[in-house]
Length: 491
Image 1 (cartoon, helix red, strand yellow):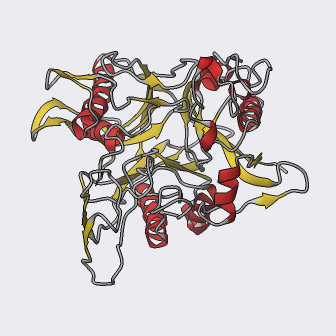
Image 2 (tube, one colour):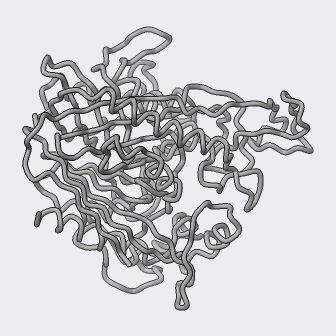
Image 3 (cartoon, helix red, strand yellow):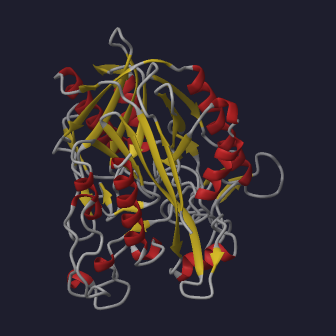
C-alpha cells in the first residue's frame, strides 16, 4: 500500500524566512591503535592497541564506505550536521544534512517522531552526504563479515544532535530573499563515471538565501560525487569534499592558514546529487590544484581540499558574476510518498534478517518474499524543486541515456522513461540522493547485470548490483517520482 502526503501553501501570504544551524557530530575516539601491516584494517593478532579506558576490549569507531575493520585513528576535521529550516508563512520544512555514509529510514522516522509538534515542522528531510570517511551508520562496515559497525550510543547522540539543530535553526529564522543558479563545474576537477554507459550529471545547483541588505544567511549546494577522495587507506575522520566546499563558500579558501579567496559568508549545506554509476574521482584520477599549481592523483586530504575548494570557487565566481537570479515570493509545497520495494539481493536480505542492517522489513507470500518500505519526495520552493531519492540514482535515469547493452540480464527497452529532469523544465531542480533512506544503488532495469556474460564486454561483474535491492527498484522509484511531480503540477 502506498501512502501519499500533500502539504501546500495556497497563496503566499506571510513573510518568507530561513534559519540555519550546524553542530559537530564527530564521534569520540577512545582506544588508540597502530596499523603494523599498513592494510588500514584492525587485526587484533597483528596490530598494537592501547586500552585507554581499561575495559579490556577494543573500542573502535568503524569507518564506513570501503573495507571492513577500518578503525579510525584520529580526526582531521569535524563531521557536521547542517540544518536549514525554511518557512513561507504557511508551510515550514526542515532539511538536515549529515556527514555520514547513509541513514536508514527507520532512523529517519525515529527522528521525525521525536520532534515536538509545537515546532510547526510540516516536513523534515534527513540527508546523508554519503561520506566514506566517517562512522558506520548502516551496519555494513564493522569488525567483520556480517558484524555491524553501528554504535547504538552514537546513533542516539546523532538523533539528539539532529533535533537540537532543528530547534537552533528555528530560533535563527529571519526574513530572507532567495536566488538560484545553475553553475558549470571546472573541467580541471572532473567527475569520473566508473560504469558504462558514461552519463554524468555534473552541474552545481545552488540556492542562496540573503538578508535585505544583501548579506548571505546560508546556501544549499547540490552536486553529485562520492564523498571519498581520501579513499580507503585514510584512517582520520573527515568531511572530505563536502567539508571543504562548505568551508570555502562560507569562510573562504585557505591554504596554511592564509586566505586565498574570500567566501560568501553564511552557513553552507551540502546535498549530494546523482552519484550512482559510480560518480567519483578515483585513486588515480587527476585533478588540478591551482594554488599548489600541480596535478594531484594519489588519494589524500590535499586532493579532497582541491576538489572541494574548486566547487566552492565555481559558486563564488558565479555569485560575483551576477549569475544568481532572484526567485520572487517563494511559496512552499511538499509531496511525499511511502513506497514498497522488494529486497531481491540475498546478502542484503541476510543482513536485514540477522540485524546487521537496522531496518523493519515486511514479508510476503509471493516473491520477493522480503519487502521494504521507503520514501520518495518532491518539494517546491518558488522556482526551485528538490527531489528526494532514497539511494544512489544512476544519472541516466535523471538526464537520459539509458541503454540495453549486450550481456544485460534483461533484453528490454529502457523502462525508466521519460528521464526525470524532463519533468520540470521550468525549475532549478536539486536531486538529492540518500534522502530519508539509504537503499543502495538504483540501476536501470535494462542495464541490470548479475550474471555472465557481462555488459560491454567486461571480464568480471560490474559494481552496483552487489549493493542494490534488486532489478525492479529503479522502475518503482521512477514511477512514483513521476506521479509526485504530476501531482504537484495539478495542485
